[in-house]
Length: 176
Image 1 (tube, rainbow, N blue to C red):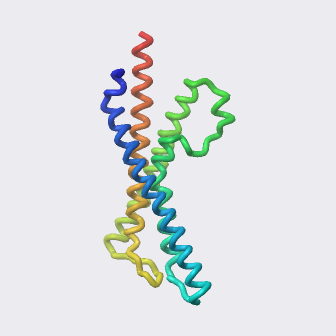
Image 2: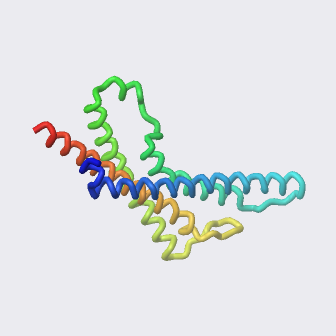
Image 3: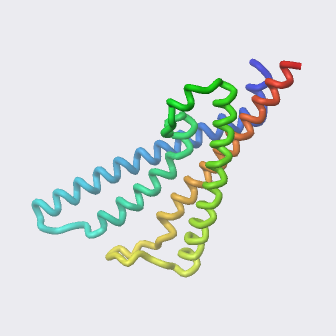
């Protein structure tokens, strides 16, 4: 094995990839939950003239959690939407620089979003704010999953940036 495979950054990358995979499985379980809840709601409305009265609320919470929990794994597996036409038209080095800039830009935007969402989360936690629905769900509970998913994604972006820096340094050292 090369020294790159034994670096601390590479080990952290491996751990982050595994955790991201687990979070994506959690997101997949949320899809199953949404399917089951919607199916139950259809049966209740069609045959029993009643409802759970929380479908829109709970499926909305699950959708938000699902998106943010799967974000890091989606990024790691390079499944996010890209403009391939432009990307394929440039050299590999330019692609690497563009990827680095994109990771830094995503991290900056993510930090701003995290700060705003974390302020809302802490306010809801501190004051015990609940949803206005029949369920009166404490709003910090679904927001906790969104915050956790976004926080993990920011860590994933940081590891990506460190990996790009490591590869650049190793490439420069091998040329000298």
